[in-house]
Amino acid sequence: MTKIKKIGTCIVAIAAFAGSTSMASAGTLEDVKARGKLVVGVKNDYAPYGMLNDKGQIVGFEVSLAKYVAKELLGSEDKIELVPVVAANRIEFLTAGRIDAIFATLGVTEDRKKVIDFTTEYVSAAGPSVLMAKDATISKWEELKGKPVCGIQGSYYNKKMTEEFGINLVAFKTQPEAYRALKDNRCIGFVFDDMTLQQKIKEADWTGYKVAVAPYEFLPMAGGLRKGDAEFQVAVDAAITKAEAEGKLIEWEAEFGMPHSQYIADRAKAAAAKKN
Amino acid sequence: MFGLDYSWLADSAYQQWLLMGVLNTLKLAAISSIAAMLIGMLGALGLTLRLFWLDALIELFVEVFRNTPPLLQMLFAYFTLSTLGLKVTDPSTGLSVPLLSAFACASIALSLFGGALAIEAFRSGIDTMPRSIIEAARSLGYGRWARFWRIEAPIAARICLPSLTNILTNLFKTTSQASVITVPELMYYAGQIYNDTFRTLEVMLLVLVIYVALVSILTFAMARLEAFMAFPGYGKGH
Image (cartoon, rainbow over all chains, first blue to last red; front, side, top):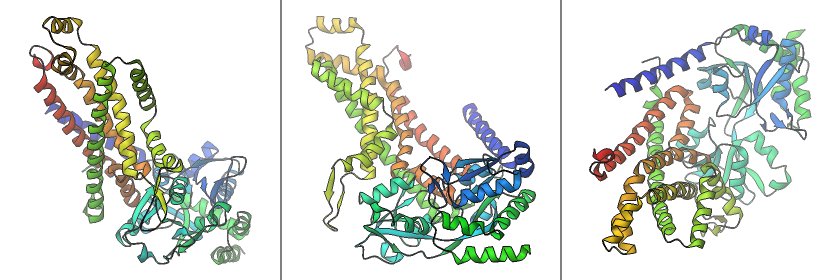
């Protein structure tokens, strides 16, 4: 009996500890200013949004945006710490207070809105598509039923893939593993965000592959902030809107080789009009 | 209770994922535990033959598989073996596919890792045998094999049971690493569920409870076995 009681107390203690850390959410703006540094979760394996350059530095569309936000908040784009995150841990990092904001290909979904707040939306990203060998005859999601398809653990669409499309999802922790497995024919395709796959097929190693199944949805992307931190959100939103108005996002789009997006152009125009 | 939200458990998809996760974890643990014990017995038996080349081979096996992380062994089996040519042609598609499935890779890696540890455990059981017992057996006229099977092996098995329990519980928990090579065990699905629902604490707590329960069954069974096999007057036979 005492043993069971002890285990019970332990679990309560763990729960209480976890509860107390996630409650410290308000006042990020003061924290950031006091610290003199903005800590941002970004991708480092996800061209064009966040990737490593030849010198091993993290660069990309969202990294530039995060640096711009740091400049607006703290006066210098160098007052930033870039923390590489993956889809599976980025929201945990944010809610646990390890980062101040997420700029890491975060799609705006209703489920996520229950847990975090979003900044203003800045990109309209295509949802997942499927990369397959060039001679593949499959072109519809329904045709993938029962077939092994590589994916990434923690992707928001994984449940839809297995439940709705009946795909036999083989989900890896990271992209390089999934690409390797696709080349090894462990799966017939790789389901991932369309933007990345479109870039992938331009690479020399991947000329034998095509994006065989087109995205079924388009999803706005935004930064992620801890819930109920209005002051910080206003400051970050103002920075993003300023970048849009100055045409920065269009510049970065070109810089990182993204296809021209009408969505970004329209937002830039709207932001500029609002400013004047 | 404690503000925990377990409403996601009502989703039949998540129920099914958890069930499949538990089943795959049990399957993987059972296969690798049995294989590890077989490897352990064979290895320890081989060491008793005192053949220098066999000793060297077994030692090399133990050093390689005990001193490398099981995670690395799984990744190696999954990604590297097929690149090195361990492939077959799939008759339905005509494509060259890896011979070993993710589950097979995980089972093999865990069996070899657990086997290496088990060889050492069994060996320690045989090595710590009091000389007086062996001498007593000799003086009673036992030959080499009879001595091994009727006296040394039963005593060694009893001596190494506690460390074997440790190895098996560790092996059980190490199955969680198989999620890295896409074996859909408990941690694989748990990760997907908390990514979907963001109820990280709740999912982690549930998974923790499931692991504690499953491993407790194992340790309980091993403790019973230990009590059942105890020498009268020693350890649990007190």
